[in-house]
Amino acid sequence: MNTTEMLQPPPAMTSRLDGELMEVSMGPQHPSTHGVFRMNVALDGEMVVKLKPVFGYLHRNHEKIGENTSYLGSMPYTDRLDYFCSMTNNWAYALSVEKLAGIEVPERAEYLRVILAELTRLQNHASLLGFLLSDMGAWGTPLMYAFREREKILDLFESLSGSRMMCDYMRFGGCRVDAGPDWMERAKKIVDLFPKFLDEFEKLILSNEIVIMRTQEVGKLSAELAINAGMTGPMLRACGVNYDIRKVDGYGFYPRFKFRVPLGEHGDCYDRLMMRALEMHESVGILKQAMEQIPAGPVMNPKVKIRAFRPPVGEAYGRIEGPKGELGFYLISDGGTNPYRYRVRPPSFINLTVLEDLCLGHTVADVMVILGSVDIVLGEVDR
Amino acid sequence: MIGTGILKGMAVTARNFVGSYFEKDRLITVQYPEERSPLPENYRNFPFLIYDTDDPEAGLRCVACKICEKECPPQCIYIIKSEDKKPDYMGKPQFYAAVFDIDISVCMSCQICVEVCPFEAIKMDKVFELSKRERFDALLQRKNELAKSNEYYHSIHPIEAAEVDAKLAEAAAAAAKKKAAAAAATAAGSTSAPGTVPVAPAPPTTP
Ligand code: SF4
Ligand code: SF4
Image 1 (cartoon, each protein chain N blue to C red):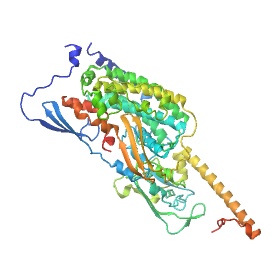
Image 2: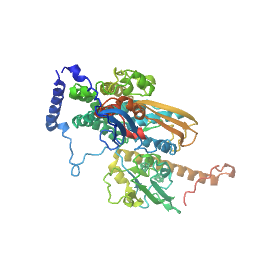
Image 3: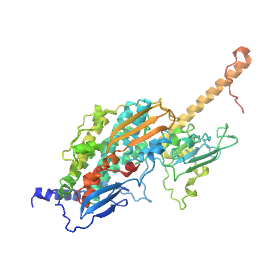
Image 4: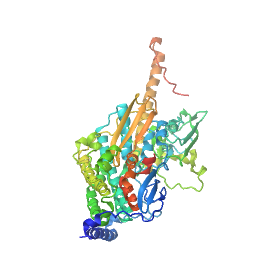
């Protein structure tokens, strides 16, 4: 058997027994469903002929709570959406409130936000790769390597914001506390060492024949479907669509940094996997530039009221390129202390809507790989 | 050749395995209850109430203004304001919290109560070993459990506490100056002609 033959997906199993389909309920308590996600899968032999996602096991009424609490009070709740990336969630929410109320953010705070968002992207992508590989059967090793790096970044978050995952760090008009020079030193060291981890990780896994066989040509997504389904983030870029909100909107100070947007070609699981690895390289580049350029100064706009904050009547939609895709918050204000409408556009949830299209015709074992490559966090899917 | 990728990966694993025994910066396991890694200055867990002097009852800075109760996102603070006023640690008569409870099974450590409190009366603690055998009453912290001294605050957040003390001292100095100015104004007002009495009556200096 030569390489190309080995790289082909297994031939479809023809159903010799003309029996009925078997329905399997995968999840919600399944180690590979990344939380409490359930799929009702109809199987013909080992092939998936139908797949119905079942959401809602982690529903916490986030949007309704947001409408019944003050603007500031929703900030800690956003940490709990995608609990891997609380910093970017904070940023997206702060951005939309700042748009709504027309608040300026000091320069240093904008730089800090970029630094923290890119660190978040690093740790999210690193742990995603680890999880994806452990879904594929590479139990432990890659995940532990990824978590080793993630832990360093979480330690940084902890010493800055006070909490590893529930950072609750950003505020309307800036950030809560300033990062001292020794924090910046530590962050620089970690960022400088990160490419070493990336090289090691790539050696460990990305040329591995088993990974290639399990991921190439699996779960292919066409650019057309991806656009129609409203997908964003690495999922969309893996299909070759050049759309990155950091470039399109240029929010924050992203236009000041030089970075490239990696693009895939086939839209299969392998491209999605590579997309994350390549994005981490770009993030390291952004981080280095940001840490070089960051000016001294205040991190909080002194004009913003903390207590009884009331934005003017109006509506605003703020969005950022989160590690998983476009994360947006849509707010309508009626001039009161609570938003009249509070809506989250969660990237994981919308990226998950094409799951059935990706899985049809593949085996059950591939479903886990495909789901892993979508990169979901159930806190955000169910809200 | 098929298999080289796998062998390369194995080499990485082997290097990491050996390295994990010899590289200093990778020997990071801490034997928890005996050894502890230090908590960062900014670490936060659950709120506590600060008292000055050494009276945990009268020294509380909290004046039961209920702002934190109102702003707390999951509504886990419960305050009953006192009917009467008692002299606080500075001798000024103030309302105080007759009941001040925080349900730490609901609290999500968001620090919003700390940010909104105008009196620097509530701060974040670093104690995390709070497991209890009983899950309702035991996790409801009462006023006497929440009250902790300013020295304790200095011991857990030295930098922040120093800033807070400086701010309070400044405010106290400003208040004293204003008081002195007001006293001078009243003294001046009583001696001058009736037409020049200050518009806003100066606050009484003694109760
Ligand atoms: S802790 Fe602060 S905000 Fe809360 S009631 Fe007391 S003084 Fe008011
Ligand atoms: S830390 Fe947050 S949740 Fe806890 S008491 Fe304070 S405001 Fe409420």
